[in-house]
Length: 193
Image 1 (cartoon, one colour):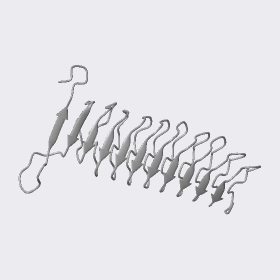
Image 2 (cartoon, helix red, strand yellow; image 1 turned 45 degrees about the horizontal axis):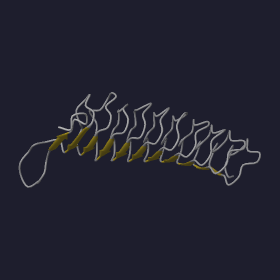
Image 3 (spheres, rainbow, N blue to C red; image 1 turned 180 degrees about the vertical axis):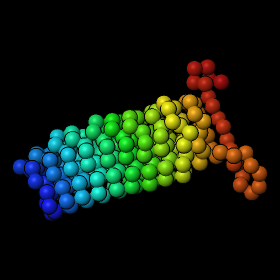
Image 4 (spheres, rainbow, N blue to C red; image 1 turned 90 degrees about the vertical axis):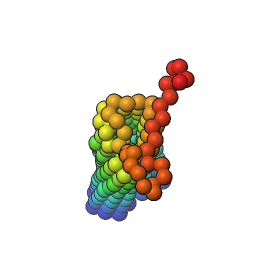
């Protein structure tokens, strides 16, 4: 424990590291947590196996487990979710509840407050999606998903609002030397057509 207010409530934690102003400040007996950065995991008191690296990373989480946040305010609002990974400043920043989300890149999944099992790779990808089981790859991918769109895969595509069960590759149908610049594939799972 290093830093003013770091681990100040700890009594008998096992395998726990707190470095930085108010890191793991409220933790009493939580185990297997790593908090590096000012106010990282500050409110945790009842969670285990979390890693928070960066100022305000996972700082309001109280009883969540198996989360990883790296970057300024990554998973900064989580207080009811497990098994999430946020790498990049402000990634999954507004997420209050949700499980199994992965956000990689500055501001990826920055706005959703509740969703599950989404994967966002690229800065500001899936920035406002509230649906489940989406995969977005590329800068700003999934930008048009602002509701409960679910089960989509978008690669370098903003997607289309209100769609679900769709695969999109690219946003344009342009011409030139770009090879595949757009693809739209939709399968009706019920009829198989």
